[in-house]
Image (cartoon, rainbow, N blue to C red):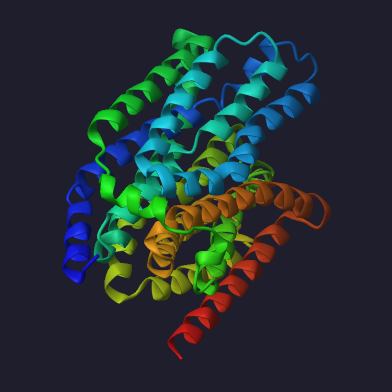
Length: 405
């Protein structure tokens, strides 16, 4: 293809990026809400399905919740590579349809193992939000990629924030099973919107299918490796205090207000990230994604230290909110660095690896945070996470400097 032909194809591919962003934003928000609304009702549902004692309820609830993330981490690179070959829109259609079916069936299960199986299937078939991230990152002009991915990230985080709130309100009104059916219907609406409103150029799909892909096709693997580590650290930092936050808050809060303050503390970081993601993404488009990424990790590392020494609830809530403001810039910067560092025809595969690394952090954070908190002390969780983030900032600074030398 000539230089003029390449430019024309790129212009055509970017024609629908704004509409694609809007559909992906709404679709990601609704699917994330539908997926996370089960958090407050999961232990109640597990009990209804036959778990008798408290230990069994907690155990099966944890297995059912983690099953989807475990499965998603395994298949994210596969879906990314298939998207490179057959079309990223097709992956969104597959994910939304599969999630709609599985969520609806969850309202019909008769045993806990059936629920766990469907959660595994949701993880295997799902990935709408991560697929949206890939489509938006690759369809948006590179000069606007940080802003677009930041806007999408805000919608995803807003869904994570709203889902549990809706899940706590709906079951008393319509019942647990009907809540799953409603969630399946909402995801089906996202499926219809994806089918009829998202536009992906056919020539781009054919060009990617004809090209060779895989890890070996990446000319410079250093930036991708750095982004995999950074994505893991991001989720680790967000999730490491989840198992200990209620117990930690109980040290300086009246017992009657512990759960309320713990919920507010957990939501504070998410709210900060929602507010900052698109703005930091746009800022990174202007001054460089590496610069914002390094600064955000370093600020988060610094903010974790005083969290280990708070003496009042408002101090912890404020520090978590400020940390969320800093971390909000990481997802758009991670995706943008990958987008700028790999060939277009394997961008989906590379971003799929990034999604898997983030899922690993999402699982490892609570596990290691709970272990350190239980055996060393809760304050040590904050300090250890701060040290890891500082190492991550140094690693990214070294990578960025090596690329510019």
